[in-house]
Image 1 (tube, one colour):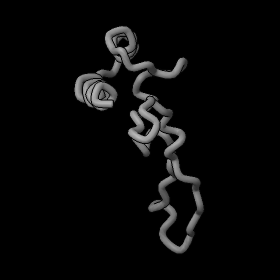
Image 2 (spheres, helix red, strand yellow; image 1 turned 90 degrees about the vertical axis):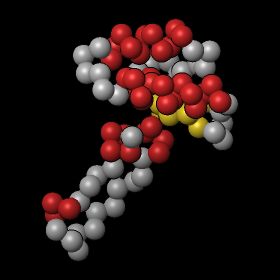
Image 3 (tube, rainbow, N blue to C red; image 1 turned 60 degrees about the vertical axis):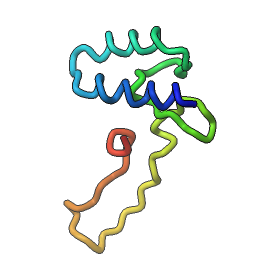
Image 4 (cartoon, one colour; image 1 turned 30 degrees about the vertical axis):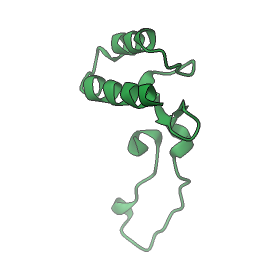
Length: 85
């Protein structure tokens, strides 16, 4: 369990600032850790779930969008995996 949280903190602490080297960093994190990531995507596409003790996709945490037009249109935020991260 602790290794999963450590790996999650490590990849965001050191990899979040990368732009063009994310693919290389992705390969290194996958090869260094004992925690298994799901196939496909990059390590940044997953979060560590304490309930299942596994990495799960951010898309599972995205809330459904319900448009409320009572406010200004420019204040609408459509939840995506990027905004959830």
